[in-house]
Length: 292
Image (cartoon, rainbow, N blue to C red; front, side, top):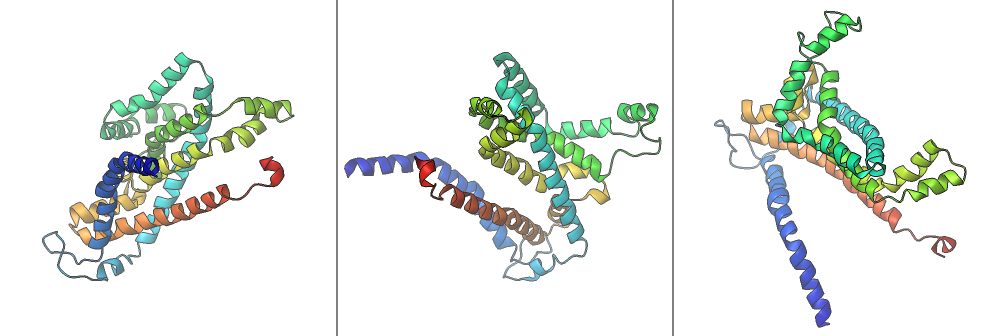
């Protein structure tokens, strides 16, 4: 009994720092945001006294559904493209030699050595109407001189994929490194082609990394506002831009908190249902012949 208590106290001491960190810097700020969304706005840019539902009702703006739809499309497309690009890259990194693996990982993380804003403004320079890329495409007769590469949703999508791709590669590589590649060879010995073995054996084998990569790409993409603000235009506005405008321009903290709370719920509720369903599948009893 004493040994069990000691082990229990040891587990609590190990998890206490992370639990306190998440409580102070994630749970409490989230609860504060939810609470502010039920407060009235103050003319001076603060939070007024009392409680009201007008802040939530004020979100019934006819322009918001279009912005929400654009945010969902750009975020989901960014996630799908990043995952599709990161899976073969993670496979290659896990299978290549040590010096090649270190080199590719170095090239993957080297963009983080530069400020995020500098990288976004660098893309703005590349895609500028007088930039080398525009001149090269016009010279090759791929686009007309009147074509504008900046300030359009496709540009936002391109830069978002560039910024989020490393966040998909790293967790997928971490999962691929632990994968038993002899299973692919066994599947090929049983008659499966290389592509079928890759899709039927390797991809399900790194499912935990796939979930982490999807979350690490999707969540920042939904809340992105710097990329649409710098390389996008009025037709590329996302939810993050509306929240930033409500906070810094309109100085309406309750409205910004209400939008942030709705965005949090829109991401949290599907995630909880997905994790619950995945947990239920993992706890299903296996058939007797599989157990044996």
